Image (cartoon, rainbow, N blue to C red; front, side, top):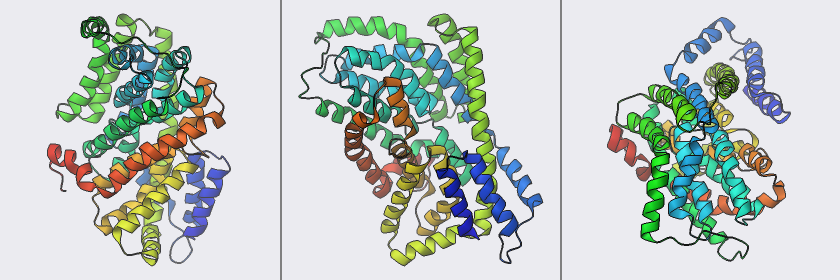
Length: 438
C-alpha cells in the first residue's frame, strides 16, 4: 500500500494540486488501507502526533524571518547594502554582477528566503544592469542563482524545517552550510566575470583611486551602517550564543521596523500592514503543510518506507559513497519537480534513517540538503526562483537557460561534490563552535 500512497502523492503534485492537499491525500490512503493487515491506522493516534510536532518553538523563527524579509524589502534596507558593496566591485568589468551576488548573500543571510531576496535585490539591480548594458538573459539567470545563497548562508527557513523533522540542532545545521555558501558565492562571482569578459556592450564605472574609494566608503558606509547592523544582530547573536534563532528572528523584526520607517523612510504604516498580511498568508501555508507532512512522515515510518528504500539502494551498491551519489541524484530529481520546502518535508523522513544507517553525520546531510534544494529551485521544470527572476526582469525563459546551465555546471555541481564527498570540511565549523562529532 505504501507504493500506491507514493503514486498518489507524486501524481497529485504533478497535477498542480496544493502541496498540503497532496500530502493529506497520500496520508488518507494509508490511514484507510495501510498497515500490515491492510486495515489502516487509527486517526486518533495520528492527529495528536501532528499537533505535538507543531508545538516546537523553532517553527516560530520561520514566520519571523519571513516578516523580517518583507520589512527589509519595503524599507529600502537592501538598497543601502547594494550601494556599499558597489564601492568595492563596481569599477571591474562584470563587477555589477558581483555587487548583485554579494548583496544577495548579505540580504539572504538575514532573511533566509530566496524569493524575498530576489524580489528586493532584483528590483534594485535589474534597472542598473539594463542601464550598464548587461544581457538580460545573463542578469536574470545571475540573480536567480545569487538569490539562492540565502538557502546556504544562514539563517535559513529550509534548514529550520530540516532540523525540526530530523531532531537536530538548528544552529549545527546552520553552520554546516556556511562553507558551501561562501564557495558558491565565490564561484558565481568568478563565473559571472568570466562569462562577460569579452562582452563589448557592458559599461562600468571608472576605476577609483584609493582616496576616492575611502571617500565613497565613508559616505556610503555611514548611510549603510544601520542596514549592516541587521546581519550583525542576527548572525552575531546566534553564533555568539546570546540568542536562539527564534529570538534572533524576533530581534531582526523589532530592529527593521524603526530603521525602515525613520532612518531610510521607505516603510509606511500601510506598507507594514501589507507586509504582516503577506507574511501571515505565507506562514499559514507553510504551517498547514508541515502539519500534514508530520502525519505523513509518521505513516512512512510505520510502513518502513526508509527500510524499503535502503534495500533498493543496497541492491545497486553497498558502497556508502555510491549510495550518497544516488541520494544526491534523487534529491536533484525531486528538486526539479517541487519547491525546496516540499522536498525537505517529503524526503527527510525517508532518507534520514538511511543516512544514519550508512554512518554519515546528520549534520553533514543537512549541508547536502541545503545545496540540493538550492539547485532544485533553478532546475526546470519546477524552478520557481528561475521563473520569478524571468518575470521580475521581463526576460523570456529561453534567454536564461544557457547562462543558468553554465552557473549550474560551474558553481552548483562543484558545491554538491564538495558537501557530499568532503564531510570534514563541512563539519569543521559545527565541530569548532558546538563540538559536534566529525
